[in-house]
Length: 203
Image (cartoon, rainbow, N blue to C red; front, top):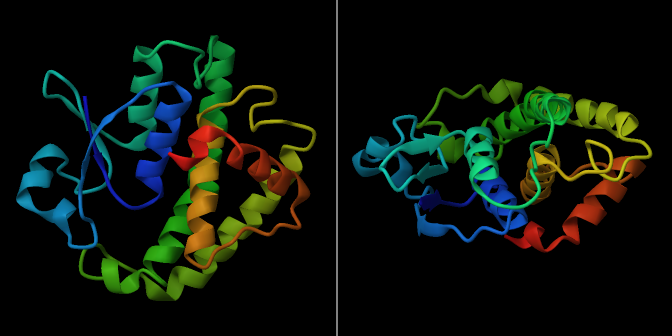
């Protein structure tokens, strides 16, 4: 397998997930600052022009980080980060979906339409006037999540999952682009500190 890697939180999710699974991915770097992901060579791999993607040994290319992570989960040894039972898998997907839609998407677009506008304005449709509102949505939903994870070690209770990897990588990204999470959210802050101590966090 060959992993097409770059700057940004989405590749970080896959790298961290793979590390949690004990996998060493062969990596090739794509320079997104120079727009390499929007050039013909990369677009032949991933027509969406987004990062990252995973090229399998048979030439199949997988994009979308949740799909890539689920593939890695199913093909690697060790404990599943999606879930060992139908109930656990449904729970992981529920929390991953909530985090993705309510926190990750507004945070990411808040950056693309704000601090990242110069990079993205000629690549995607941007809505600069929506930036602050989207950031506020992400903050409000993170506060909502703070209440829901009280007393839990991980998002899904006592087991590490894709939901934890996704949220950790994007909160780390947020801190680097002017959207630090509120450390007064005691449950989120405690959870973040615990996840940051895992070796995979540095992947």
